[in-house]
Length: 367
Image 1 (cartoon, one colour):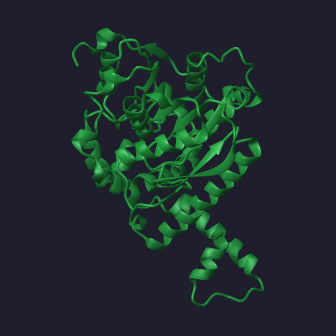
Image 2 (cartoon, one colour):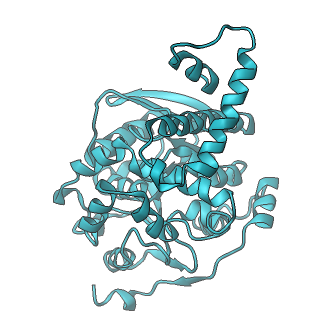
Image 3 (cartoon, rainbow, N blue to C red):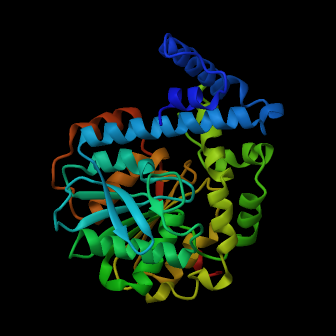
């Protein structure tokens, strides 16, 4: 249902079809105004009307992005498995080419990897699934899924799209799932590239409470530790809209329901040493959601891991430092000899390269 249609249908005294387009446009402009200017006001935080308006805008933008990705070569597909119908984007659908699978973070969707996927488009088969129960277009069978079930769902998905193991890039929750796959389903994983991965016990209770009892004021204080760089922080008009959108994602019932399922046994601290495939780790130093003890624990368990601090960047590295992530990934996957496409050139012109430093095993000695 479109944004305009949903509002026409929700009003008991809606006008006739004559002039409905103009009415819809007028409402759309008003909703955009509410979303960008009025919504940040604290006294409107719990307004159901404004919340509904924002949800419709989010859905409309997600559908527009899906169409744009289709046109750019990342085709929208679905795959059925035991947990429902998983939606994904695939640069080479119906191919047995070994994929690079990009796993997004909590509450988000595959679209958060759009920039990186388009940069890799001519180098590898790129696949971006929407994890169940979050912001994407996947349709789950179950009302709630645990981390174990999410891992099994991704395992089934990889088996359904390729006969070869996948190179997996995991951000945050996606990194947690990627590590569990490498531990529990090693034949499905050729390599791991981890971007500020979750899944370890450090600060776990603090993060749980933050997500379960998130308020706008609390989120406002932690936002710089999630998205800290231009244009996601400090740009008039753009930054508030992006901030409110991320707040809605983390405030959603699906995120709270998932967080409530997490148990101590789900963390992978004591199992990381079982990972046998090559591992690369990038960690945004300004991350305030997860503890910097996490990357140190990973390299202590996996001393051969290629690990780097990304200075001045925070949690969502694929958006904040796409050039850093891209360059590290193409070297790690040994595809740097393939010529960069035009989109890479454009991104290089818009995004700076952030300072990086190797994480040494000596730093992890105290863990």
